[in-house]
Length: 131
Image 1 (cartoon, rainbow, N blue to C red):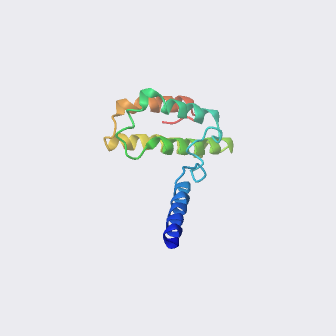
Image 2: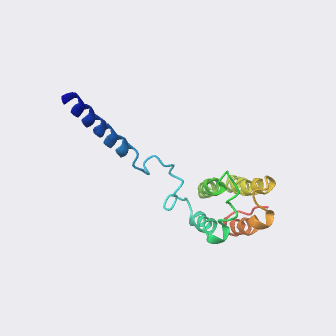
Image 3: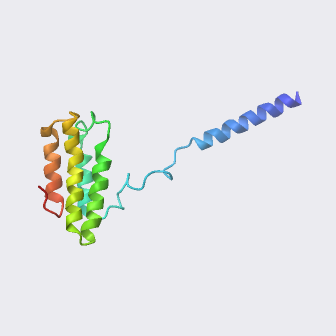
């Protein structure tokens, strides 16, 4: 009887510990996923808000790559390069971010018409001239 109680008690304790370990935490999350205060420039935050608009959520639904974080990561790197007085690197990074969207068009995840407003918005808000 004593062994059964001990076994039951240990099972309950291990279940409790297991549940505690399953509690979600943001401690291990990548620091660029929620870049609210970590973006290098305000224009990156503006572009993030545009990408998250209701108008565009259907555009990215067919893309298994989830391009928004990649685009924002590259644009933030472009902002850092621009702030460091390296406009050519900033321009290259912006072009790379736009290429992420163009790759989605080539793979037929969305159409060119779907991403043209996003691309135009990005081009209008970055501090470097892109083709």
